[in-house]
Image 1 (tube, rainbow, N blue to C red):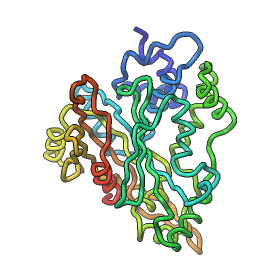
Image 2 (image 1 turned 135 degrees about the vertical axis):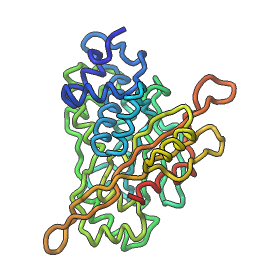
Image 3 (image 1 turned 180 degrees about the vertical axis):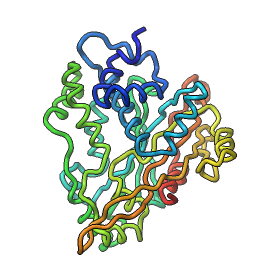
Image 4 (image 1 turned 60 degrees about the horizontal axis):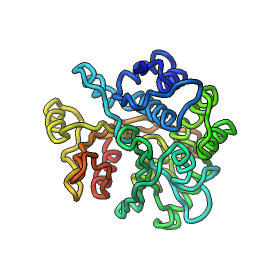
Length: 340
């Protein structure tokens, strides 16, 4: 079996993150041996998808100190992280794009679809005026991390909110250049992609999971925050991972241990309607962000991203894990970015 660091996934990650950070990130994750079989000069969609998820995990750990501390403690205990999924939030207006970006989750459908993902299910998040879309990989559904991509429906709020949202998110740029789009087009057509092409495209595709709009005016931020903590979070953090998730054997026992250790863990564990999926999370780390004002700029401390934990039981009559999500669970986890 090929060594992870010299595999296609490892080489892509190290090429993007650098030797030190890339090696550290690779050493943090439990990556299935079935994903490191690429040989020759081409990169499969599965290898690219896993490399992308690994890179985004590394970026998330740079931005979430509580998560990085947990990962370090797990590694010290001899256990690597199983990256179950990452989650991100998008904006959808009633009509038209989001600035230069395709509307809402369409900005990520054009990435995830060619990389071998499909929407496994949609989840209404009615209390938040949002919809979640679970993207699951077709080739390795249990081994390649899922994406929970949510859309905030601006048309479900009032006119003042909509106007503020247009001023903030209407400035969004499209991070995907010609090279990245060419690689995604090739994958969509089932064509081979060379390592050089994949390596050149990865930075642009990874950069899509970030802030694409200009800093918000403080008045617009306050207008969004007054009606939606989630919209306010997107105003400062954009399409970044709002959380990465470790798949663990017993999330209840883990949460109890982390609480005893004084970690910033959620007060309760969310349990799905089926009882097979259980989730909890750290509260969001605080970050400092810049806002525009009529007189210049100010800085303000706001909620950033966080780290989540999930346990998945097998489906009845099957050896496969229940890879579903749950609307109530998701709504409870979203609250973590309200309490930095």
